[in-house]
Length: 113
Image (cartoon, rainbow, N blue to C red):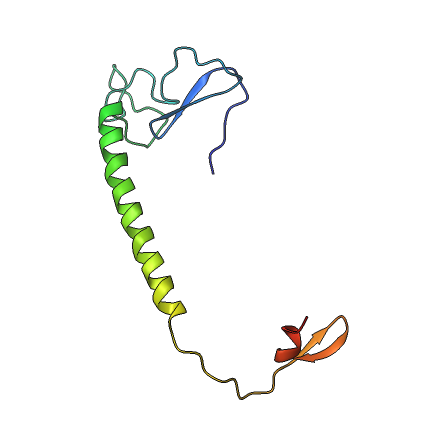
């Protein structure tokens, strides 16, 4: 879940820019202003964040790679769901009973209109 600061400045969340109140302004990644790629300030001090920082180009390349993997995962999941739905049906021999607002009902009763 992404949380936003309640101010009218832009915040960067994992490389994506989000604006609050419609005012983008000139903002930097929160907690990394004045830091290098290793998260150290210009004076060599460690910054508040423990996240890696980088360029927009590196983020975009990595994001596009992940997007392709996500699409492949979706295709595999869809194929698995299709195969599951093609499984043969079997007769249910057990007499299941359910408590409903109208009293006890069988499994077949649940599907009657």
